[in-house]
Image (cartoon, rainbow, N blue to C red; front, side, top):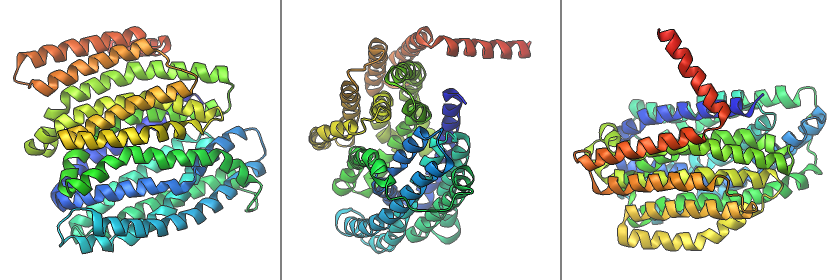
Amino acid sequence: MSVKRHASYNLIGALIPIGLSLLTVPLYLKQVGPDRYGVLAIAWLLLGYFGLFDLGLGRATSFRVASLRDASREARAATFWSALCVNAAIGLVGGVVLWFAAGYFFEHVLKVRESLRPEILRGVPMLAASVPIATVTGVLTGAMQGREKFLETNIISVLSTALFQLLPLSTAYMLGPDLPLLLTAAVGARVFAIVVLAFRCHQELLKGVRPKFHPEEIPLLLKFGGWVNLTSIVGPVLVIVDRFAIGAILGAAQLAVYTVPFQLAQRIAIVPGALTNALFPRMAASDDATRDVLAQRATQTLACVVSPMVLLGVLALEPFLHVWVGADLATKAAPIGRVLFVGFWANAFALIPFIFLQSSGRPDLPPKMHLLEIPFYLAGLYGGMKYFGLLGCALAYSGRCIVDYLLLGFAAKRRYHHAVLLLLNFAILCVALVVCQFATLHEPVWWLMAAGTLSAATVLSWMNLPPELKLRALDQVGGRLRRAS
């Protein structure tokens, strides 16, 4: 099964929930209000961050199962049961920690109207229950990805994510916007994923093998997973600290102004994420020379596919927001979102050296690079918020993404593949960003800039597109023209 096909499964699996998100965010804002939506955004961030109690065993399970591709079913089952037992126990501990941490944050730190605070605190136990669910899901998903079962994994993920978005909204419509009820509905969606994934893991890895905990597997998993887990601790801090700072300093209502464009810009990550998740098992089973070729081709493909998408996002963001969430929020959120789009563009290429290092047995280097970034990022975030408000947060975040790519590429033995192509695309994005910040759709200079940058990005991407992708695109266009005639 090819990497391209696996990446396609991952991409489709990520695009469907995005469509649902585009439909549901305005409904959430209308149904529960900006305050409750801001609290839900913080809750989702807490759930994502406390996935660190996975101890990196989800990715370690994927790595170990992939490396045992030709081993016996018993060997793979030993890895699975060992990782599952440890992650379930650690997840319970993480749930207790989250209970206290979330309770303190929501009671003493988050700025929100006092009438809403008791309702928020009643939802904390459901947040805590989500942690062991998340850690167990990580092992189940890692095992299936290690066997390169990306189609099934994505089908399950799509169904679970759809339920995760729709069940709370349906609950709000039928029973009212009560936060504990909304969180209970979201947890129920995650339980569905566990049940289905457990059934498929049994068929793929465990059928005919007696369940047994193998202590000797734990050091092998933790040696890899420990560094991955440190990445899981440090990496999310760099991703979510901006919104915690906004909630603590500017209040929950301002979170919606920042979170809405952030979530849109974050969707750019689905393309590199789909590709790198498909590449990881293949890289883990390859030598350094093959990994380097795969990394070069991945960077080239991403540059030609993602760059025009990001440029289009920068240009179309404000009119889209006007239609999607209304003129008032669009005017405030668009300048923030355009800057964030450029940051997520840089983050797309940082994923390539990131998985190169993990798959080559150096999972220690990414978290070391992230630790170097933290003090500088926090200083930039503070200065940006102090002098430029929400736009300063976006500038600090995007600057950190660019630095992240440079540091990870340096750690991967200075693997800055296709650097000239990336610099040219970055220059085009910066031109679009600056003009959009100072001109509007009603001015001729905006339209001239849009036409010029889109033309330049399209030509640059076509000239550098890998030959096999270029031939496939030409074949598809030719086939459609023939059918049309």
